[in-house]
Length: 194
Image (cartoon, rainbow, N blue to C red; front, side, top):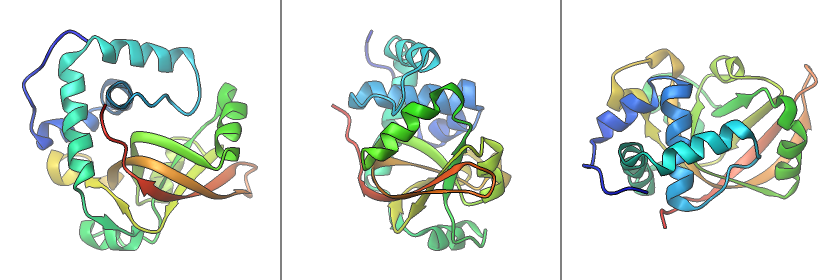
């Protein structure tokens, strides 16, 4: 870590988050892992590359810090309540991932009974979530804190994305019709920066 960058606004942080997975949310998730000391729930070269870049990028860590701080004081709602707030009727919030070469590690993480992601994005749309992959689907049940990304960024309202994060209890993992796995998660607590 090289120093302290000026603190960006929540709007700037959300705009960066929504600027693209490889240029926004993935680097910010890595910066949150660096700030909290929490490793990713699976190991991969590309994850290590994001983490190494985040250690060297003061501005990126400053943006992630803004999101972590906002999440710490964010209201907690269920998926249907979040849907009401954003004007998108939904009783579902979650994210999909393809799994790929990391499927075994993901299954092991889920089998541990809890999974921790300091920051991650979820959608209120199952269709949008499935666009990121349907080998594994993470669904949040119950109340959880979140930041309504588009409310602050003014972009990508069709993704109905919430920025959330924390420690999650794995309630169950069930098979899907398409041969994937759906993990139902319950929020436990946010993860603070160290």
